[in-house]
Image (cartoon, rainbow over all chains, first blue to last red; front, side, top):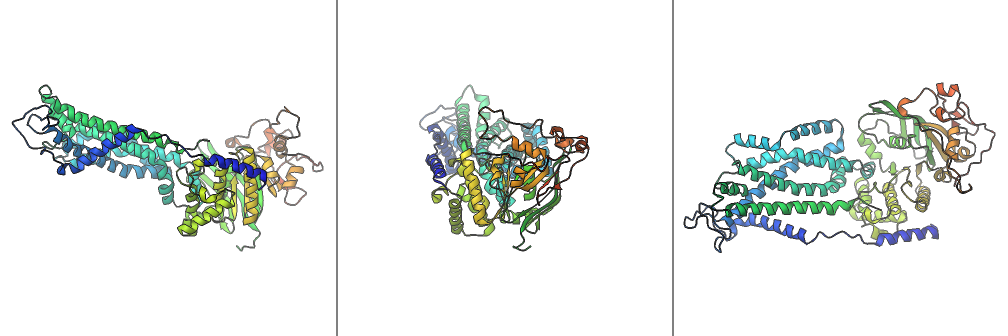
Length: 293
Length: 337
């Protein structure tokens, strides 16, 4: 190579050396992550924490306001609201995580495969999914849960999870379609990569950012949905606490004891807000994978 | 086929037709040519003349539906037309590799460039992790990337366009292919980098004893780097011959129009660029006659009614498809940059 062109290479090299700077995720992001983490730890370790039994009814303190002994006060049966909020997060969190596990477990591989394979497989599957999407999920969920008795957390997870499959399918399929037509996928193919390798090593990492942020927002949506179901009395049976259940119970005594409505609502609201914020922030953060010159 | 067969690639009456809503679209038709070992052939033509479809068909890369391919592509004794995905996968990388037009989209943005070279070495050649890495760094050095060991861990986004195209070439070379298809390898790059990349390809071709099909719409690119040139129009070969013959003794009016439309340094400043009047034909509505006839000043009634087949010119290997060819005596002096 001539000196002249060597000069250009060096010039290029200088450009290369510049470290790539990404916008930091920010304090608020980490606060949200911390809050979510705290909730998860609380839900897992609830049995080992020094909490009052969430089912213990103390008739000496009915509808009490927040105090040192009862941080969030007590409900109309004298049960500790703080303890019930912590235990209630178990139901909400496992509903969110479980349903999304089902939704992504089926929806994501199907979506990727359909977008990669195209053809008849894709068109049949996509149309079937769109038929399901056209049906209002909440109505279907309510209908199924009303008849599928006795109700249990597992059944709720299954019903919401299955209902979320078409949604996940659609998002993942679209994301994959975007990537699957890129030259580097064809390049990998003509270097002799197998379909499995292309799906797992080339496509998956490229759609992961979209998948993760959709997963977080999906969990938030399911938790809200479980709350709505509980409010309608279609979630886990009392006296098991869940955030939605507690809000439902507070409905009749809202005037005597607003705390029973405020604290579980606040817990749910904060949790969902954090999840949404994290999802949104991550999507922004990873959006720079596409190269600009 | 033996290693000593001088012909590496034999394309015979190749046709690729897309089934579209508007009817069959013959993107490539009746293409036949041969490519010797260690030879570079240039394929030129306007946008939409079927150059890319031709390379993809040779490669055996088609969509799974709505495409019919007929004819034969014999690559080192292996028939590519109608071969199963598995058979083709065995040839991809080691027999034939491809360089893409745009280095911005032909590298995976979330994988380190070294890993992208590694992949095929480990999967195809079955090298160990350490060996593959050593070989990948060697390849990066081969394609002229400074401090390759350092660059091995870079993401594509950290490299400039020229560097990225070098990486793309390194990936293509990983399994030492015998045939390299370069589909407009420099279109996405600026001029100085273009020259570097083309010189690199030339150099590598000599060193690694590859054959190269260089697809381009830039005649300056093929002028000095190919031994033969194929001129395509509307999916067909309209002229084929040695580079010297095609430049100086072309017979097909389209070739002349193409040559005339490339700007020359010797022109006065502010000279209007020469263009070919009209537009490439709609492949869905091809007529019986020569597809260039509507834009050709030499066209006669016969041109509109009957399609000319390739006919040999004086020099062996030079052929053109035209009823009213340019006179053969004239020594044409069309210079390119």
